[in-house]
Image (cartoon, rainbow, N blue to C red; front, side):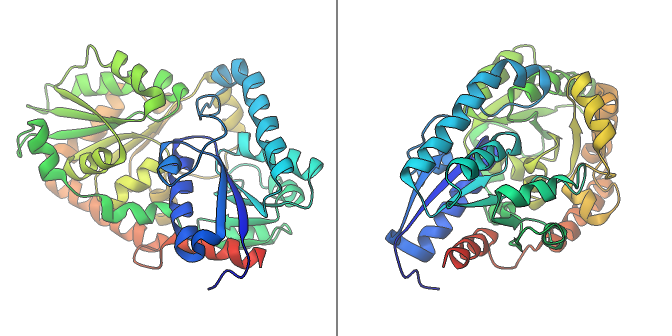
Length: 387
């Protein structure tokens, strides 16, 4: 499609996973519209690499869980006001709010109050179909368009009067980057035959607090059963210090790596992964890395969510297949013995690992692997909507 007039877009994310999606969307927008689109907003390293000058860093907004959110509420609300005010004053054609609904939806609501003519677009809507469906009706008051990642989401939102377009899951585009495992092992001195476990405790400070210690102890329990076990932890800048501090007594040889290239190479090199629930589980599925998934929050947050959640699974692979192909250990089930017990067959039994790999293949096919890039579909949907 052609872009007939210059467009100004503001992209806003609140945490590293949204930063990755924003960077992919920026690339797609520029590939279609070229220099006829200018982009401002809030992002991290990935969006900065695409030329974004962020209004502020993600440190104040990449938080989750009541214990961590409450002390940062003043800072978060200040960032909400800052972003909304910037949009109202600069008057972009549209503001695209990416994931992190507790942060980005506040910006959308405020912006609709102070500058209602500016279009607001939600990229990666909250999974309200899993918890609080009534929120979809509220979203229709402050969003003009939703770009849906899962095929059943578009008709769900349309049923609540909110225009929605299915564009596919952006993580699919990263599948071709899950390479370099052999060179990764060689560079770090990891023997080709050594069992390698990728440990992914999350990108939020709260996840490092609650999940990281459980993962470290699970690795300790694996030592007697998996001789020669080596671990690798890909991390992101704003939690890297805490990850390294918590690794001082790690029970196996350990490599901590930074950057996307090393993260994806680690996925390719790993025999299995222990991962916090989130976007990374879809990336591991694209890498065909067998995994065990876990998540844990503070007791009060857990009690609130326990009353709200209406779906059986936390992992997209399991949701798509409607069965627990990937072992999940959520909250009280997230214990080192349980995690280690689920990892042993993936590291020791080639048939069990191969079965999960086949399940990952099936799930990614259902998600749209092999079709047109989701970010291109999202970019076209945005441009079509504005024209």
